Length: 387
Ligand SMILES: *[C@@H]1O[C@H](CO)[C@@H](O)[C@H](O)[C@H]1NC(C)=O
Ligand SMILES: *[C@@H]1O[C@H](CO)[C@@H](O)[C@H](O)[C@H]1NC(C)=O
Ligand SMILES: *[C@@H]1O[C@H](CO)[C@@H](O)[C@H](O)[C@H]1NC(C)=O
Image 1: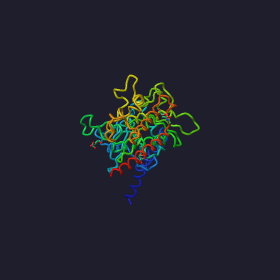
Image 2: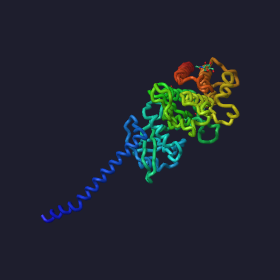
Image 3: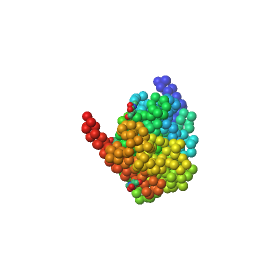
Image 4: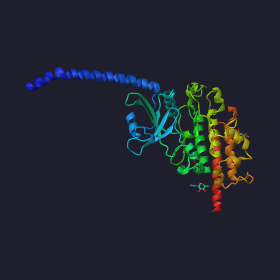
């Protein structure tokens, strides 16, 4: 009895006030949390990425990338670095883009990319898994995006990395059919962004290092950090994007459409131009920033000057080798492979016209499908004939 009484008075004097204090603290924290949550929602308009994916914290990502170690660094973009990481101990490989929030525009780029990818679903566009917007261990803002991992790297590496890393004469073998598949995949992605979506999306930074390859070498367009979108067909202008900020670097040298130099308006023809450059680059296998393209010469002009008659002098010699074409003998325009190359390069020329209104739209996707299918079916017939 005595001890119970003692407990009673103890609980009255000590436990109850503690409970009261704890309860009010919890109330205060949850109100603050709610308020903060509301604020976050406003600033990133609550990204919800279709598929269910567990929430990840800064410390999950530190673990997944071994402390953002350089051995896991797989790319560097304008606004941050991309790491590969293993999440949740499993084989769950992901790519983690960590925004460098000290760079001007990086915070905005995070929001732009969230908004652009939130409703986008396409087999040739990188899938975003989730966003992480929190703070690191020292309390600094931390923003990251998680994407599905692309094991075969990007198109730039496919084209220019060397086998065994021993000298430039040992470039990767990239077959004509693989090149055709990649341009077809990228054109499908752009046609979807420009024409088949409720909102027209302009990517604004199409280039080989933003074209990623999965295990079966299917191409995926990634990095929507400077994308612009038009929410519905009733408005004619594009949303406030990074492009509206005249101090932001727009696109990438070599791939950027000429009209951008004067601060031109956002339009789908910007992507068409960059796509055309990538296409020419893939079949010529020279970067648009190559030393030979200066003083008024560009990869597009080079192609224009040499097509059709001198085509064999400008295409990647590795393709001629694969196709058993000799560029010293006159070009056989009846040859299936020659026709295919010529049609593809002509599309590259049309996409890179200097005047935007003269460029084709991404309806080129259908044309490229046709060229590819024709090449492959004729190819099969010839193989049958030979065996
Ligand atoms: C990529 O393009 C090739 C060529 O058209 C096609 O066979 C393949 O299905 C495409 N892959 C995807 C996932 O779209
Ligand atoms: C690359 O392609 C060339 C020509 O088709 C061929 O001779 C060579 O053996 C190939 N190399 C590899 C490593 O596949
Ligand atoms: C593409 O360009 C070629 C020559 O440059 C031209 O003959 C053709 O009409 C163009 N096609 C389209 C659809 O603009």
